[in-house]
Amino acid sequence: GPPGPGAHCPGAPPSTPAQAPAGGADLSAHLWARYQDMRRLVHDLLPPEVCSLLNPAAIYANNKISLRDVEVYGFDYYTLAQYADALHHEIFSAARDILIEHYKYPEGIRKYDYNPSFAIRGLHYDIQKSLLMKIDAFHYVQLGTAYRGLQPVPDEEVIELYGGTQHIPLYQMSGFYGKGPSIKQFMDIFSLLEMALLSCVVDYFLGHSLEFDQAHLYKDVTDAIRDVHVKALMYQWIEQDMRTAWWPMGNSCSSSPTVLSASSSMWSLSRQTSPASSLTGAKPFRKLDEKGSLQWDRITRLEKGKIYGQGNLFDFLRLTEWRGPRVLYFGDHLYSDLADLMLRHGWRTGAIIPELEREIPLTGLLERMQTYQDTESRQVLAAWMKERQELRCITKALFNVQFGSIFRTFHNPTYFSRRLVRFSGLYMASLSCLLNYRVDFTYPRRTPLQHEAPLWMDQLCTGCMKTPFLGDMAHIR
Image (cartoon, rainbow, N blue to C red; front, side):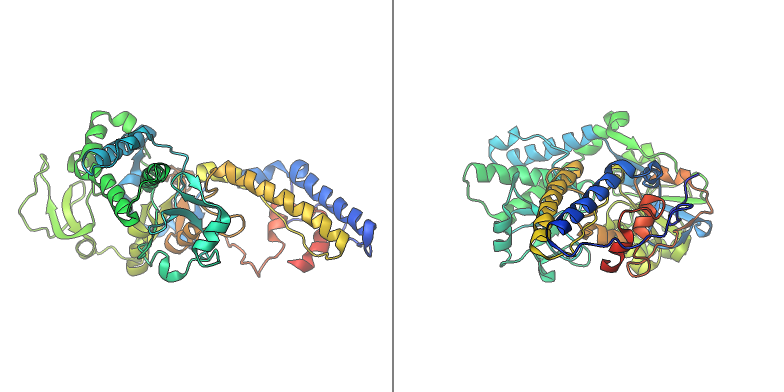
């Protein structure tokens, strides 16, 4: 078989630095030869076993977790059963109509339909500027990914709006739980609807030169989305057609000793899909009877297979005595589902990231070489940079035309990606990924830090040390 990651090819000569010409046309030709070799490597020589390393069905670990130690598996309700596309369209349309009929917004916004490919998770919205944008882990706006309404905002205007820089100060950004004073971050799957509706309404007002208060518009759209839940419209649709409203995630944890589902959904919906209780409130737990009526008796223990209403996390921990790594809890919202449980209570956490199924097959590699500074070399480098920028745009469009990948800007991790690492011990595309692993599996493999293995990525991606000019490049890493 082929050598594994990090292995040298049998019989291959040791990598030695290529001798570069002194300068001028010879150096230019040398650089172009390097470029063509690297291009051929990427397009023609990338071994097929590399593709198998990028597996959308895998589980990825940010923290060491042994499933052998897990006694309780917990789930946010919507990680067990997610909205189907048809339901997203229904929710969008209902919230749009609520804006028109109850909030007296212009009838013209009824022309907008839900576009599921417009936004991605993890975007930030500057309420006062009506600006939806992608921000990296270091608080910089990725240029080319700022939109007002449905139209892109020129890079120059974005920089001017923030005082001559792409950087967003911490005090303006989302706070510790994602709730900043002027900038909102959209973190869960459901927020895709909110971003789409918000952008459509802003687009209508701007397109018709209507004056509006940005803060009022933002709150009205948020309230309209909330009203779809409060008025129970969504639950009525689901109960009418369970098969087309949900994508069931399957019974992935049938071998676990205890399973908890936490939900803020209506009792009738929870009963049809999974026993559930809400942990987000402040009231004590109350048992529900078969008709969904709250009982009056005091709760001194939680019984398996029963459904409880109201409730709160602190009473839950007191009644169950579940602490630390005994519990592995899954959710899709990094702040409201996972952060508190991990930081305050020591639970293991797993993030469900459906976007992995699409993004992993598209993930690629990019090397930059900028070591030569003479005039002709700079001309070669300028041509490389032009092509790189073109490839960046193509790569971005593969993920999402407007905003690109949810995990990366062109080279940095996104703000969403950084919080994913901070608040989740594991992440995966679906709970069904658990079926691919033994119940005593331990995560993760040791992952090199940046300073520990500068050549690790090259060895991993080529299967052996045969990257052109690898030895020559070692000193610039």
